[in-house]
Amino acid sequence: MKKHLSIKSFIKKIPKAELHLHIEGTFEPELMFKIAKKNNIELKYKSIYELKKAYKFNRR
Ligand SMILES: [Zn+2]
Image (cartoon, rainbow, N blue to C red; front, side):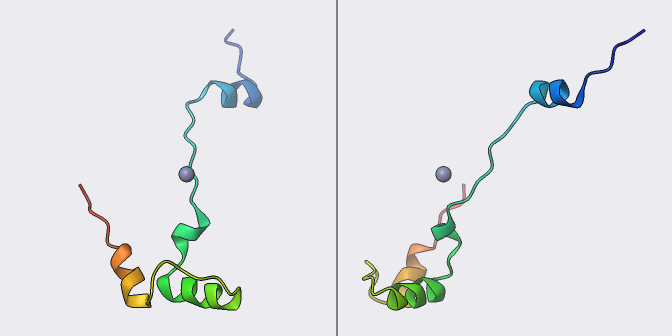
């Protein structure tokens, strides 16, 4: 008779991947400026337009 794995040992054996995101990477430029202003933080981007340019990534 085949012994079934417990859910714990099954989970231990299966391959894993770590998925995460960096919260600042989820900010739309407008929101980044809004939050920076609210917290009196100076951004290295002078305008929303300049920041939007920094959001252009190359896809390979
Ligand atoms: Zn990371």
